Length: 298
Image 1: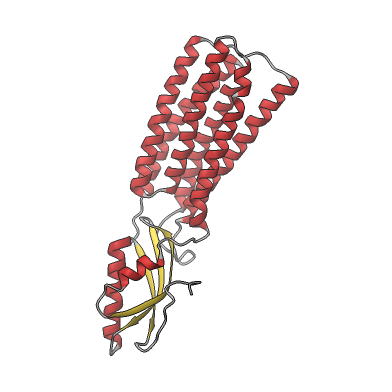
Image 2: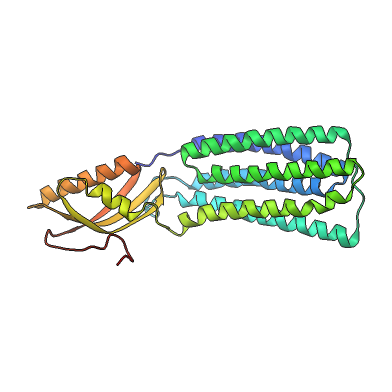
């Protein structure tokens, strides 16, 4: 049976949301006071952090692992859809940063003014983000939560962006105002890369890419006494959260009761190895022959 980790994930998201609002307030205040393009872009990126947490809480309210009449396979993919929302926010942030940089190049703007205390506040922001990223990633991996892992990726990009902004701010403080403008472009690239990583991680789940190699499933099943062969193996889902396995099974049985006992042993073996799983088995007569382990194989 799939476990419902949503209450734990929600507690993490709420805690992180509070920290992200604090970070946003610091960056927005510093950006407004200094007039720094890179600082304001970083503050915009932090808006997406807070929005991601809110989006994650909404997605988690729909992502129950328990099946119902309308969703017989559960609601896990709502969480992956929430992670794609993170990608959308990152894309908007990237475009806003690039647009602001080009506006400054062609139309000009006030030269940013950086004061020493701003650099100390930015270091505090980096410390908070490092804590958030590692905390979310650790809990996300422990619970198998896509939304927490995606948000940890997002926060990691925020760390690199903030470090880049600090470098630019130091340059401005030393009289090299052009650094603020130049460094806005690598900030945009880091935001884009973060979004691409989240997208690449969630698409396989949404399009039902193979969860477990059919050869690995075949090896596990063939260890069960009474199994002659299994073929046309397919799997989807996410290991550690919920995996669905379909297969055709050939068993050495003389009656239905004996065949049922063997199939239950197969399900138990797969549950022990890849828990939680839901296995659908199509029985074949003992005389049936097939060397097709998976779909599309020779």
